[in-house]
Length: 230
Image (cartoon, rainbow, N blue to C red):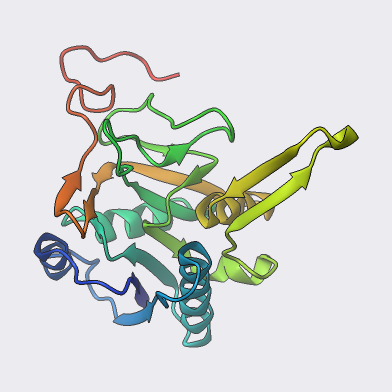
């Protein structure tokens, strides 16, 4: 069974997002269940996102789902994303997680995929590549639910803490998204984290109606010059 886990904000969704979900291509001969959670607008947004993901994951495991596909209400997946992500996990039994490429809501957009913490986004891949990474965004991520039994709770946790520096020389703020923290736990438990460069998402701003894409002249999408990816 595949669970489609939808995390929704307290806002309308874009028509294009709804159409992207409606036209989604799933693997053949598969049962699909939808689980949803809505963010409480009176509480911290990032803590609420973590709570929603955690509750969906717990319920997915309890009903016997084999895979959980997390999808945010502002991330429009490509039509074949669910089928591609499922297929990648099934062909890589040592992988626990695979994510589509979600762009940031910035100009220019950056891919939310990393190969080393602290060294910025990973750009050295080409459209269609499937590769290992240290972390990938949870906005469009498929998880093999059996790995949750190997992870310590909470599985999804947004970190925002202030650390007093040695010698009293100021305060340092440490922020880590629930996606980076979750992927670290997955890797520490011995499972691979993978990214699908063939599943590119659109990141919508539901307030302005602007959709964010990877730049067409960025390395992953350039066709004029193909170099070896190290």
